[in-house]
Length: 265
Image 1 (spheres, helix red, strand yellow):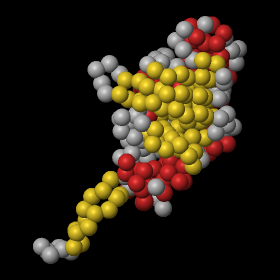
Image 2 (cartoon, rainbow, N blue to C red; image 1 turned 45 degrees about the vertical axis):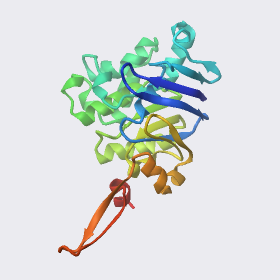
Image 3 (cartoon, one colour; image 1 turned 90 degrees about the horizontal axis):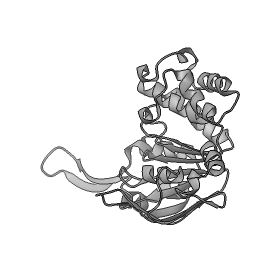
Image 4 (cartoon, rainbow, N blue to C red; image 1 turned 90 degrees about the vertical axis):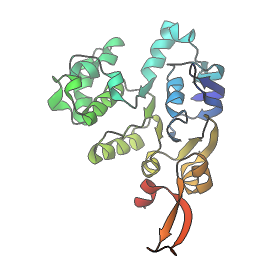
């Protein structure tokens, strides 16, 4: 479904964000993109969504090259935009309509779908937003905005979901609903996170990005989570010293910590 070959990207006046990334994604896979803040996760998802183009390397979707010129061609652009969707880490970047109903219905309306309002009401109900259909999006709480942005992309009924830290603002109930939905939806899903406790719930295969946007690992998620050297290299666990005892002769040693993951085990 996705083929990235030798992708390199750097923002203007900034260090390289992605450096020679090559990976493939099969339809129906559930993948977790792991990496510390600044490792290039969001940039990689934007590239898969066609919002930015690689400076070197190539990207293809279902065997067709994805380039700025190709995305200006009506038929391909329409299909790509309806099938490949991205949930931004900060939902405010996606919200601009006067009501919750209009926000969710916006994408289907742009595609000329006759059931745009019905889709909006369906996904609002699924995410607990039905009482807010006439509310202004910017009056919502952070978690409600995240749910609204998610409903807006799900209303397109896409084939590929690209999710950037999707549970960052969700309460436990909404997070549980999202995990269950993603595992059972039958869609291809690539989810980025630096939260190791949540990663194990989101897929079976992991991409691990390290400093400078280099791909450090591509394989079974559980193998990545068990590899402390890999997680330390990716800055997903940290090493610090512990003092045992309260006096000057206290025993001190150092080891790695991944607090969010260990506390959930």
